[in-house]
Length: 388
Picture 1 (cartoon, rainbow, N blue to C red):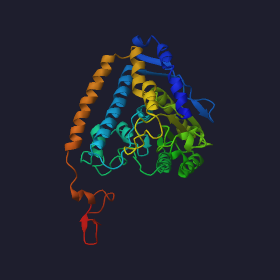
Picture 2 (cartoon, rainbow, N blue to C red; picture 1 turned 30 degrees about the horizontal axis):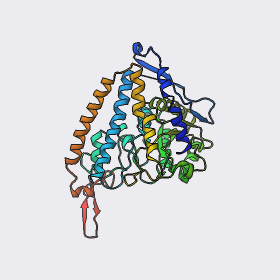
Picture 3 (cartoon, rainbow, N blue to C red; picture 1 turned 90 degrees about the vertical axis):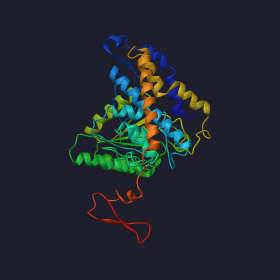
Picture 4 (cartoon, rainbow, N blue to C red; picture 1 turned 120 degrees about the vertical axis):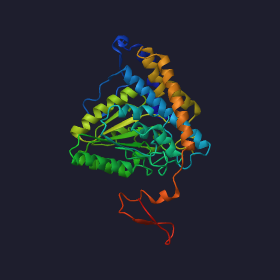
């Protein structure tokens, strides 16, 4: 087990204490507030995000529903992949739900996001319906990219994917932030990558350019501990990823605490708009292997995965907090569980039965707004078809 993971599991052992110290006024105020158990680690910052976090009842139910939806989406994706209804690459986000849900809750609707290929959760949280994600995986018309993109290439407004090349999205994220600054837009770009991509040279080049021009970008390392199957302690000389920007300030965050993630993102967004780039390391965990071809058991013990599920799971720890504080009832959460389960059943049915694209569609969406009757070449020099 890597050192960062050990530290956060130890911290989570005191979760019961934290829950019991929640404000008793939450029942009358319709909110909960508490001090996060693990302080943020700071780099080149004199002051960091507030250690006091809070949410009201509506927010709590919304966060729970979104995390539960992503978890069930990924469970369905894994099952369909095993049934050979989904082919190709498929990287599941189970265990990391608090990162995308917490970050999006602190963002403006016109902020931009670009991420790596573990993109299903971010695609959903950026506005693509569950059907748009799952149908994209099964190659159907109702997918968000009409079934042409698959697991790694999903897009929607202000969401630039899903990128298949390790680390390549980080320079692109800096470019999107440059666009925001050039157009005098009060927005940031969130550029995410994994701990495995943290050693890519282009990541450091993007840090440098972003700082030179003080671009409004939040670099986010989603540190799930094992890259493509190598522990961070074996793959990185320094596993303090929040310090790896050197001249770029950084914060290490418990990526399993949705409210802590939201508070850190609020701070980072305000900082980036005023001062330029900042780096967040979200310490999280993936329950599945790197991809569906990786069983995820050759480089870690099953007992470790089970321990994280029991002590740090972002959904169960959050539900325990809000129920024991009296903010919501277990019956309300069960109702959400049932609604999400029913929705996913219908989504799965449609993802398997909605029509696929006609072969002619292969020639479309190659160029942006092509001229009328513009043709593209087929598989040989004798086939040319009109492209739209």
